Amino acid sequence: MAEARLRQFDAAMAEDVAALIDEAFAEHRELCPLNLRWPMPPHETIEELADALAGPATRAEASFVAVHDDHPVAAAIACREGEDTGWWRVATAPEYRRRGLAARCIEAGESALREMGRPAVATDTVVDSRWQAANALFGALGYRLEDPERRNITMMVEGWVERPVEMAEGYELTTMREADIEGWAECRNLVFGSDAGPEWFREHFMSHPDFDATGWYLVKRGGRIVGISGALAIPDPRDPEHVRGGLIEYVAVLDEHRGHGLGERVVSACLNWLARRGVTQTILITQPFRVPAIRLYEKLGFRTIAAWHRWVKDLGEAATC
Image (cartoon, rainbow, N blue to C red; front, side, top):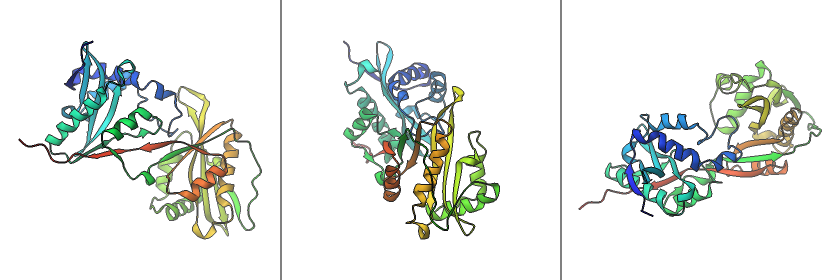
């Protein structure tokens, strides 16, 4: 069998490369998504992929395709965002794997970027930790994980059974009302070190069709919101009558009110709300450095199913003659 040849990507190859990417990622589409609220790449259709590949965001001069019998069998596609360049898709046809073709495409792209004076390159989109071959490839090529303790991780609980929630003395459990939004934002900002106001909540949550205020729970003491957690029942986009799964958003308890089991209670209330809606799988997103939060989630039955990887490599200076 003749060896595959490397070619620089051009827009005329977009449809064929899109079909390659779709085939290469078929098994990954069967995995639980990292985030239920938005489809993670590579869940686009072939037509959408082809449009994106042929669009201005693709950095063709750093994108390479391995071609065999005039068909793309591996590719490393780079994209641009301002001055930054990142790997948007790296794919190999199943029957051509373990031949080093994707590595050759990446290395050709790195060489082109180095000649352009780019100091570094990274994965532009999230690399799911469950994509073992992709992560092994980047590791073997000298890439490093960027800030691994602060990367996102996805945790899941399955088969939650509704249970009573009894609050500690002096604390009240309520659901969200319009008048509570400002207090919710204050609690979130104090815990997470952010500065988003009520309009941020309205834009990011209330404006979406899957928002239901009865699934957003607050812990109050003396009328002040001291703990929060929200639940979303996400419909399946292919069948809106069917619930795709549950998502827990923004669990927070003010420092001075910790030690009373408030986090466990407010999350349990959210899980009860989801269970009453027939949700059997619920996920949440956190980061490894949040050790107390992870311990709480594990106590409630959550387990880590995936980490969100971003691989980075310093390219150094271009070679000189």
